Every structure is written in C-alpha cells, then in structure tokens.
Image 1 (spheres, helix red, strand yellow):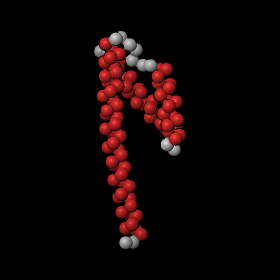
Image 2: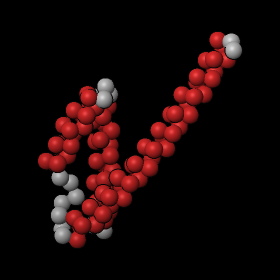
Image 3: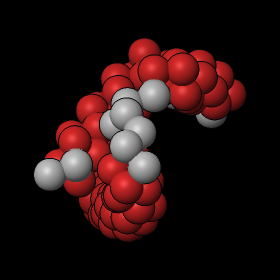
Amino acid sequence: MSRNEEAVSRLKHYRASIDNLDAALIHILAERFRITKAVGVLKADYDLPPADPDREKKQVERLRSLAKEADLDPDFAEKLLNFIIREVIRHHEQARG
C-alpha cells in the first residue's frame, strides 16, 4: 500500500468515527431536550421562572471543569452550554404559551 493509499484509508477511518460521534451527539442532545421539555412543562404548570441563573452558573463551572479534565477548551464548552441553555429557556418560555 502506498503512503497516499494509507493516508486515504486512515482518513476514511477517522471520518467514519467522526460520523458516528456526530450521530451520538445528536441523539444525546435530542434526549436532553426531551427532558428539558418536561422541565419546562413542570415549570409552566407551577408558574416557576423559565431560567435558573444559579443552576446555570453551577453548570457552567461544572462543565468547564469537565472540559479541562477531558483536554477540551473550557471556553468552547462554556459557549456550547450557553447556546444549549438559551435554547432550553426559549423552549420553556414557549411552554408558558
């Protein structure tokens, strides 16, 4: 096998792994949103606020720490979590009608 063929083979393997991980991320996010939707309905039923800044702050700290442990940029992890939180809050506000 030539060096080029070997590189193409390895690239194909890496891309297959990335595709599998992307699929897993989508399924995990879908499950997370199913649960947060239930939280939003509960909050709406009991007239609780859609956002919980104290919990969000703790989650950011927790995920930044996990990111560091996983050798992932904590700033990226925080941006991702903040994006998800904004979407969850939007869903919670919609649940209020």
